[in-house]
Length: 343
Image 1 (tube, helix red, strand yellow):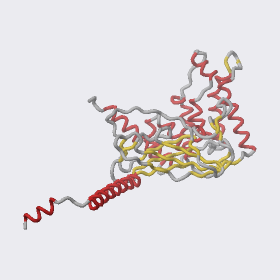
Image 2 (tube, one colour):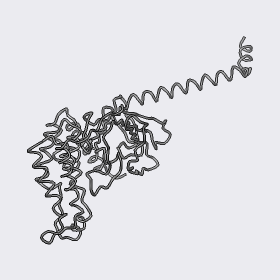
Image 3 (cartoon, rainbow, N blue to C red):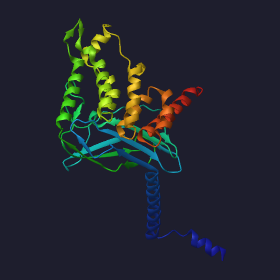
């Protein structure tokens, strides 16, 4: 009996049966890989938000993006950022065809042993950006507030993250956010007046006119602060305030930069200015529930870690509070990394 069994087992399987067995194994492997990808996709959640559905022409649109690990295991991904090569933005105008946005990309060098950035269960990566800084029709930044212009129309924006971009031996994984849909309308008379006033202020950075021996450009920061103080009193929810007190304070024109380099005027540091800090905190307090408020929190806490924990507690479950808590965790992680002994 044992010899008979041995003989049968040693006989080769017919070709058809071998092919069927290999096909079954291949299907099982593909199913397992698909299931693994499905679990990974369910584990990572990508969301995008602009706060509302309608804007006026040249109103700053504050894009807030989140990458969350809603699973129970640590995920490893490529560096997540709106300027990452793994993140793709596409936009359609007037219900037309989606077109990829030609945004700036930051190159990141990693060692050969790198296996991806860990995202622990419950962790969230958060980032804000003014949409017109990277999307729309390019125009002269010396004459306008933003590098790009979005004309009045209906828009749809899609955000895609190739999570395993550049990860060695990792199965490709694409995570998509739900489409953003919003409208841009023509400006009212009051909105037109404000935009023109801000554009004139922006042009000061390139103004070569000299008053009292100094180029008129040196008055840019004082004019911006004066405008912010006035608008905070008159209209504390003004959508331009977070942009001006964050992006606007670090962008100067060529003439102003030349005056600073030459030492003709003292360099203005917004991060050590008590007036700027007071204005930022006041605007955050008024706009904390908006993506605009989260944008200004990002600008403040990145340079004032001592205030971050206070904001995280005070702002609670708002976009501003969420951004503050993210910055606290980010600063703690960076501190732990710096304190690690060299290997």
